[in-house]
Amino acid sequence: MRLDRWFRVHFPDITYGHLQKLLRSGQVRLDSRRAQANARVESGQQVRVPAVLRLPPKTKPSLTPPLGLSKGDRDFIEAMILYEDQDVLVLNKPYGIAVQGGTGTKRHLDGMLAGMADRFGDRPRLVHRLDRDTTGVLLVAKHRDAAAKLGRIFQTRSAAKTYWALVKGVPKPPQGKVEAALVKAAGPDGEDRVRKALPGEQAKAMHATTHYSVIDRVAHKASWVSLKPVTGRQHQLRAHMALIGNPIVGDNKYDGDKVLAESGIEPKLHLHARRLVIPHPAGGNIDVTAPLPDHMRKAWELLGLDANRFDADTGG
Image (cartoon, rainbow, N blue to C red; front, side, top):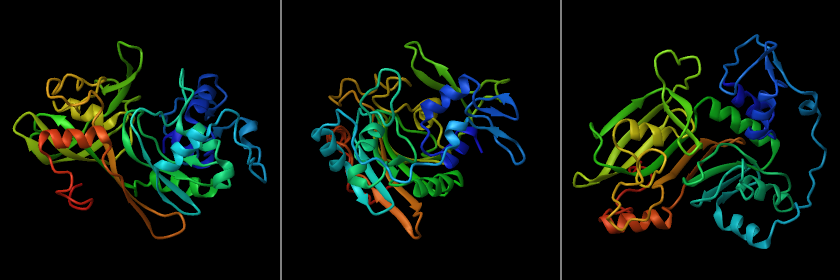
Protein backbone atom coordinates (compact mmCIF):
# COMPACT_ATOMS: atom_id res chain seq x y z
CA MET A 1 0.00 0.00 0.00
CA ARG A 2 1.22 3.52 -0.78
CA LEU A 3 2.10 5.58 2.28
CA ASP A 4 -0.43 8.33 1.45
CA ARG A 5 -3.19 5.73 1.14
CA TRP A 6 -2.12 4.12 4.41
CA PHE A 7 -2.71 7.51 6.06
CA ARG A 8 -6.05 7.87 4.27
CA VAL A 9 -7.21 4.59 5.82
CA HIS A 10 -5.80 5.06 9.33
CA PHE A 11 -5.98 8.87 9.68
CA PRO A 12 -8.84 9.98 7.34
CA ASP A 13 -8.94 13.46 8.88
CA ILE A 14 -5.44 14.32 7.61
CA THR A 15 -5.56 16.16 4.29
CA TYR A 16 -3.12 15.30 1.54
CA GLY A 17 -1.59 18.77 1.76
CA HIS A 18 -0.99 18.41 5.52
CA LEU A 19 0.58 14.99 4.98
CA GLN A 20 2.93 16.44 2.35
CA LYS A 21 4.11 19.07 4.82
CA LEU A 22 4.77 16.40 7.46
CA LEU A 23 6.74 14.34 4.95
CA ARG A 24 8.80 17.30 3.74
CA SER A 25 9.70 18.26 7.31
CA GLY A 26 10.62 14.67 8.23
CA GLN A 27 7.93 14.33 10.89
CA VAL A 28 6.63 11.19 9.20
CA ARG A 29 9.21 8.44 8.66
CA LEU A 30 9.18 4.92 7.28
CA ASP A 31 11.57 2.60 9.13
CA SER A 32 13.26 5.71 10.61
CA ARG A 33 13.91 7.18 7.15
CA ARG A 34 12.37 10.08 5.33
CA ALA A 35 9.80 8.95 2.78
CA GLN A 36 7.65 10.26 -0.03
CA ALA A 37 3.89 9.92 -0.34
CA ASN A 38 4.21 7.21 -3.00
CA ALA A 39 6.54 5.02 -0.90
CA ARG A 40 5.27 1.47 -0.46
CA VAL A 41 4.40 0.30 3.05
CA GLU A 42 4.92 -3.41 3.54
CA SER A 43 4.08 -5.78 6.37
CA GLY A 44 6.54 -5.44 9.24
CA GLN A 45 7.62 -1.89 8.46
CA GLN A 46 7.28 0.88 11.04
CA VAL A 47 5.57 4.18 10.28
CA ARG A 48 6.45 7.03 12.61
CA VAL A 49 3.40 9.22 13.12
CA PRO A 50 3.55 12.57 15.00
CA ALA A 51 1.96 12.34 18.44
CA VAL A 52 -0.58 15.07 17.65
CA LEU A 53 -2.11 12.86 14.94
CA ARG A 54 -2.47 9.96 17.35
CA LEU A 55 -4.63 11.89 19.80
CA PRO A 56 -8.15 10.43 20.08
CA PRO A 57 -10.85 12.37 18.20
CA LYS A 58 -13.17 14.65 20.12
CA THR A 59 -16.20 12.80 21.43
CA LYS A 60 -18.54 15.27 19.78
CA PRO A 61 -17.90 17.17 16.57
CA SER A 62 -18.20 20.91 16.55
CA LEU A 63 -21.48 21.88 14.93
CA THR A 64 -20.42 25.48 14.44
CA PRO A 65 -19.70 26.20 10.78
CA PRO A 66 -16.51 28.18 10.14
CA LEU A 67 -16.80 31.91 9.72
CA GLY A 68 -17.41 33.02 6.18
CA LEU A 69 -19.42 29.99 4.95
CA SER A 70 -22.23 31.71 3.15
CA LYS A 71 -25.75 30.52 2.53
CA GLY A 72 -24.80 30.51 -1.13
CA ASP A 73 -22.04 27.98 -0.48
CA ARG A 74 -24.37 25.82 1.58
CA ASP A 75 -26.96 25.90 -1.21
CA PHE A 76 -24.16 25.13 -3.68
CA ILE A 77 -23.39 21.88 -1.82
CA GLU A 78 -27.06 20.94 -1.45
CA ALA A 79 -27.63 21.34 -5.20
CA MET A 80 -24.81 18.84 -5.92
CA ILE A 81 -26.26 15.96 -3.91
CA LEU A 82 -27.12 12.93 -6.06
CA TYR A 83 -27.53 10.46 -3.20
CA GLU A 84 -27.45 10.60 0.60
CA ASP A 85 -27.93 8.23 3.50
CA GLN A 86 -26.67 8.10 7.09
CA ASP A 87 -23.18 6.98 6.02
CA VAL A 88 -22.37 8.49 2.63
CA LEU A 89 -22.95 11.46 0.41
CA VAL A 90 -22.55 11.37 -3.38
CA LEU A 91 -22.06 14.72 -5.11
CA ASN A 92 -22.20 15.75 -8.75
CA LYS A 93 -19.09 17.93 -8.81
CA PRO A 94 -19.33 20.88 -11.21
CA TYR A 95 -16.59 22.22 -13.46
CA GLY A 96 -13.94 24.57 -12.08
CA ILE A 97 -14.21 23.96 -8.34
CA ALA A 98 -11.30 22.44 -6.42
CA VAL A 99 -11.95 19.40 -4.25
CA GLN A 100 -9.25 20.33 -1.73
CA GLY A 101 -7.32 23.45 -0.83
CA GLY A 102 -3.81 24.20 -1.97
CA THR A 103 -1.55 27.11 -2.78
CA GLY A 104 -3.81 30.03 -3.66
CA THR A 105 -7.00 27.94 -3.37
CA LYS A 106 -9.30 29.20 -0.63
CA ARG A 107 -12.70 28.05 -1.91
CA HIS A 108 -12.95 24.28 -2.21
CA LEU A 109 -15.43 21.48 -1.52
CA ASP A 110 -13.53 20.07 1.46
CA GLY A 111 -13.77 23.41 3.23
CA MET A 112 -17.44 23.88 2.41
CA LEU A 113 -18.29 20.39 3.66
CA ALA A 114 -16.40 21.08 6.89
CA GLY A 115 -18.61 24.10 7.38
CA MET A 116 -21.75 21.98 7.17
CA ALA A 117 -21.15 19.73 10.18
CA ASP A 118 -24.38 21.13 11.60
CA ARG A 119 -26.20 19.77 8.56
CA PHE A 120 -24.55 16.35 8.40
CA GLY A 121 -23.95 15.70 12.13
CA ASP A 122 -20.19 15.32 11.68
CA ARG A 123 -17.43 16.60 9.44
CA PRO A 124 -17.85 14.94 6.02
CA ARG A 125 -14.63 13.38 4.72
CA LEU A 126 -13.46 13.02 1.12
CA VAL A 127 -12.94 9.41 0.06
CA HIS A 128 -11.37 10.12 -3.33
CA ARG A 129 -10.67 13.16 -5.47
CA LEU A 130 -11.36 14.69 -8.87
CA ASP A 131 -9.30 17.33 -10.66
CA ARG A 132 -10.57 20.90 -10.45
CA ASP A 133 -11.91 20.82 -14.02
CA THR A 134 -13.22 17.24 -14.00
CA THR A 135 -16.95 16.93 -13.33
CA GLY A 136 -19.16 14.19 -11.99
CA VAL A 137 -19.51 11.59 -9.23
CA LEU A 138 -17.64 12.37 -6.01
CA LEU A 139 -18.05 10.10 -2.98
CA VAL A 140 -17.93 11.58 0.53
CA ALA A 141 -18.12 9.75 3.88
CA LYS A 142 -20.36 11.37 6.47
CA HIS A 143 -18.37 10.12 9.48
CA ARG A 144 -14.98 8.70 10.45
CA ASP A 145 -15.97 5.02 10.46
CA ALA A 146 -17.46 5.18 6.96
CA ALA A 147 -14.36 7.00 5.72
CA ALA A 148 -12.07 4.26 7.05
CA LYS A 149 -14.17 1.47 5.54
CA LEU A 150 -14.47 3.18 2.16
CA GLY A 151 -10.75 3.91 2.16
CA ARG A 152 -10.05 0.21 2.55
CA ILE A 153 -12.54 -0.61 -0.22
CA PHE A 154 -10.77 1.75 -2.61
CA GLN A 155 -7.48 0.13 -1.62
CA THR A 156 -8.73 -3.27 -2.79
CA ARG A 157 -9.77 -1.71 -6.12
CA SER A 158 -13.35 -2.83 -5.57
CA ALA A 159 -14.67 0.51 -6.80
CA ALA A 160 -15.78 0.49 -10.45
CA LYS A 161 -15.32 4.01 -11.86
CA THR A 162 -16.49 4.98 -15.33
CA TYR A 163 -15.66 8.29 -17.01
CA TRP A 164 -16.93 9.78 -20.25
CA ALA A 165 -14.64 11.97 -22.33
CA LEU A 166 -14.46 13.66 -25.72
CA VAL A 167 -11.06 13.08 -27.29
CA LYS A 168 -9.13 14.04 -30.38
CA GLY A 169 -9.36 11.58 -33.27
CA VAL A 170 -10.31 7.92 -32.91
CA PRO A 171 -8.21 5.63 -30.68
CA LYS A 172 -6.78 2.55 -32.38
CA PRO A 173 -7.84 -0.08 -31.64
CA PRO A 174 -11.29 1.28 -30.68
CA GLN A 175 -11.19 -0.75 -27.47
CA GLY A 176 -8.02 -1.33 -25.50
CA LYS A 177 -5.87 -0.84 -22.44
CA VAL A 178 -3.20 1.73 -21.64
CA GLU A 179 -0.50 0.60 -19.22
CA ALA A 180 2.06 3.33 -18.64
CA ALA A 181 3.75 4.14 -15.35
CA LEU A 182 3.63 7.84 -14.53
CA VAL A 183 5.91 10.27 -12.70
CA LYS A 184 5.18 13.78 -11.52
CA ALA A 185 6.84 16.62 -13.40
CA ALA A 186 6.25 20.36 -13.19
CA GLY A 187 4.94 21.90 -16.39
CA PRO A 188 6.15 25.15 -17.97
CA ASP A 189 3.61 27.06 -15.87
CA GLY A 190 4.93 25.45 -12.68
CA GLU A 191 1.73 23.47 -12.12
CA ASP A 192 1.69 19.75 -11.41
CA ARG A 193 1.62 17.40 -14.36
CA VAL A 194 2.52 13.79 -14.92
CA ARG A 195 4.39 12.09 -17.76
CA LYS A 196 5.41 8.60 -18.76
CA ALA A 197 8.22 7.23 -16.61
CA LEU A 198 11.60 6.96 -18.32
CA PRO A 199 14.13 4.14 -17.89
CA GLY A 200 15.78 4.49 -14.50
CA GLU A 201 12.74 6.18 -12.91
CA GLN A 202 11.06 3.00 -11.70
CA ALA A 203 11.68 3.85 -8.04
CA LYS A 204 9.44 6.90 -8.17
CA ALA A 205 7.10 5.76 -10.95
CA MET A 206 3.42 5.09 -10.25
CA HIS A 207 1.95 2.06 -11.99
CA ALA A 208 -1.18 3.11 -13.89
CA THR A 209 -3.68 1.17 -16.01
CA THR A 210 -6.69 2.48 -17.94
CA HIS A 211 -9.24 0.60 -20.05
CA TYR A 212 -10.92 2.59 -22.82
CA SER A 213 -13.69 2.00 -25.34
CA VAL A 214 -14.99 4.17 -28.18
CA ILE A 215 -18.74 4.70 -27.80
CA ASP A 216 -19.28 6.94 -30.85
CA ARG A 217 -17.22 9.07 -33.19
CA VAL A 218 -17.40 12.24 -35.28
CA ALA A 219 -15.78 11.07 -38.54
CA HIS A 220 -12.04 10.97 -37.81
CA LYS A 221 -12.02 14.23 -35.86
CA ALA A 222 -13.20 13.25 -32.41
CA SER A 223 -14.53 10.38 -30.30
CA TRP A 224 -16.78 9.89 -27.34
CA VAL A 225 -14.97 7.37 -25.15
CA SER A 226 -15.66 5.46 -21.97
CA LEU A 227 -12.67 5.28 -19.62
CA LYS A 228 -12.31 2.84 -16.75
CA PRO A 229 -9.24 3.39 -14.57
CA VAL A 230 -7.91 0.37 -12.70
CA THR A 231 -5.60 2.59 -10.66
CA GLY A 232 -6.28 6.12 -9.42
CA ARG A 233 -3.22 8.23 -10.18
CA GLN A 234 -3.24 12.01 -10.47
CA HIS A 235 -4.18 13.06 -14.03
CA GLN A 236 -4.06 9.38 -15.07
CA LEU A 237 -6.85 9.47 -17.66
CA ARG A 238 -5.68 12.77 -19.12
CA ALA A 239 -2.06 11.64 -19.43
CA HIS A 240 -2.90 8.19 -20.78
CA MET A 241 -5.17 9.50 -23.53
CA ALA A 242 -2.53 12.04 -24.56
CA LEU A 243 0.11 9.27 -24.61
CA ILE A 244 -1.83 7.28 -27.22
CA GLY A 245 -2.36 10.39 -29.34
CA ASN A 246 -5.95 11.15 -28.32
CA PRO A 247 -5.84 14.01 -25.78
CA ILE A 248 -9.07 15.01 -24.08
CA VAL A 249 -10.77 18.05 -25.62
CA GLY A 250 -10.14 21.22 -23.64
CA ASP A 251 -7.22 19.79 -21.65
CA ASN A 252 -4.70 22.63 -21.42
CA LYS A 253 -2.14 20.48 -19.58
CA TYR A 254 -1.95 17.61 -22.05
CA ASP A 255 -2.30 19.21 -25.49
CA GLY A 256 -6.06 19.00 -25.75
CA ASP A 257 -6.82 22.72 -25.63
CA LYS A 258 -6.42 23.26 -29.40
CA VAL A 259 -8.59 20.28 -30.39
CA LEU A 260 -11.82 21.31 -32.20
CA ALA A 261 -10.94 24.93 -31.44
CA GLU A 262 -12.94 26.21 -34.43
CA SER A 263 -16.03 24.11 -33.76
CA GLY A 264 -17.70 26.39 -31.22
CA ILE A 265 -17.14 23.93 -28.37
CA GLU A 266 -16.40 25.61 -25.05
CA PRO A 267 -12.67 25.58 -24.14
CA LYS A 268 -13.21 23.47 -21.03
CA LEU A 269 -11.98 20.00 -20.06
CA HIS A 270 -14.42 17.42 -21.44
CA LEU A 271 -13.89 14.73 -18.80
CA HIS A 272 -16.77 13.54 -16.63
CA ALA A 273 -16.93 10.96 -13.83
CA ARG A 274 -20.08 9.34 -15.14
CA ARG A 275 -20.71 6.44 -12.79
CA LEU A 276 -19.45 4.88 -9.55
CA VAL A 277 -20.31 1.41 -8.29
CA ILE A 278 -18.81 0.51 -4.93
CA PRO A 279 -19.68 -1.68 -1.92
CA HIS A 280 -21.55 0.30 0.73
CA PRO A 281 -19.76 0.40 4.12
CA ALA A 282 -22.97 -0.86 5.77
CA GLY A 283 -23.67 -3.59 3.19
CA GLY A 284 -25.06 -3.70 -0.34
CA ASN A 285 -23.80 -1.43 -3.12
CA ILE A 286 -23.69 2.24 -4.00
CA ASP A 287 -24.45 2.76 -7.70
CA VAL A 288 -24.74 6.39 -8.80
CA THR A 289 -24.68 8.02 -12.24
CA ALA A 290 -24.14 11.75 -12.85
CA PRO A 291 -25.69 13.61 -15.81
CA LEU A 292 -23.36 15.39 -18.23
CA PRO A 293 -22.42 18.97 -17.27
CA ASP A 294 -23.76 21.77 -19.45
CA HIS A 295 -20.57 22.32 -21.49
CA MET A 296 -20.33 18.62 -22.40
CA ARG A 297 -24.04 18.30 -23.12
CA LYS A 298 -23.79 21.26 -25.50
CA ALA A 299 -20.75 19.70 -27.20
CA TRP A 300 -22.64 16.41 -27.67
CA GLU A 301 -25.54 18.30 -29.27
CA LEU A 302 -23.22 20.34 -31.48
CA LEU A 303 -21.42 17.21 -32.72
CA GLY A 304 -24.59 15.18 -33.17
CA LEU A 305 -23.80 12.72 -30.38
CA ASP A 306 -26.77 11.28 -28.47
CA ALA A 307 -25.97 11.12 -24.75
CA ASN A 308 -29.18 9.12 -24.23
CA ARG A 309 -28.19 6.48 -26.77
CA PHE A 310 -26.66 4.37 -24.03
CA ASP A 311 -27.74 3.98 -20.46
CA ALA A 312 -25.24 3.84 -17.61
CA ASP A 313 -24.77 0.08 -18.04
CA THR A 314 -24.13 -0.15 -21.78
CA GLY A 315 -22.68 3.31 -22.29
CA GLY A 316 -19.73 2.74 -20.01
